[in-house]
Image (cartoon, rainbow, N blue to C red; front, side):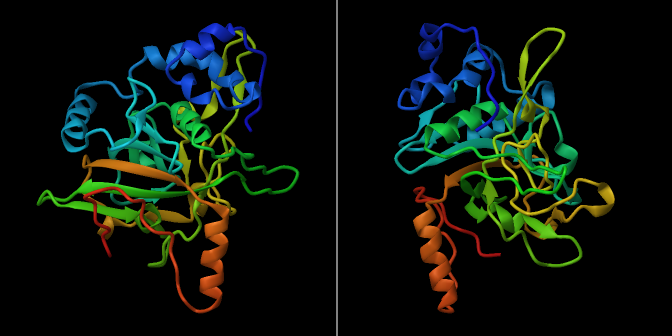
Length: 295
């Protein structure tokens, strides 16, 4: 759980927000941070501005409709939730095909130079969606006095897109992240670290720190919403991951990310199968009309 601070927004306004209607089964302490953000999130366009991003939004709208059976979380963000199947969907585009990575995904208009995907959403909207579908936020990475890996619910991510022929494709997002100096890919799923809040000492306003762009990270950041549960430096000379150029669609391609909360019981079953020398991957989420690409 991210650190909480006192909030002044009345409960009546909190539960009147469309985003917060998803939270009513949750304890009030889960809502305090969202309280101060609800009017802000509902009133703002997603991070991206300018002609380029307007054109990308048009392409994304033309490529992806509303996911079947899901509820849109915020009218100004391309984020949907499926509480029954414990998944969150967020739309964006390919920002980088080649180069070293600190993020798998950032917010549009922030860190596209080091992220495979940029999404049209605020980080906290996705954070809210993950809580709403039952994910548990853990703790961000700790570096001092000793390293502690980020924790939180395990989240598997799949990417969906259309190729140049208009064919629908899907892939486990880890296959777009290559280990530097090898042909191997990221093995661990992401964890819902939950970022943290920062209070401006001059204005008293609170800020969700992942809004700077640290959304889904492959280098450890204490501000990450999702992070990798292994020691991964953000120092340029020590970056562990790069974009898997041969597998990633061209820049500007609309992409839909499916964030699936991993059931710990299914994870244990998968580990048992592997111990019996029957390799097993978590299956692609059941999304009609989409086929998994086998790179």
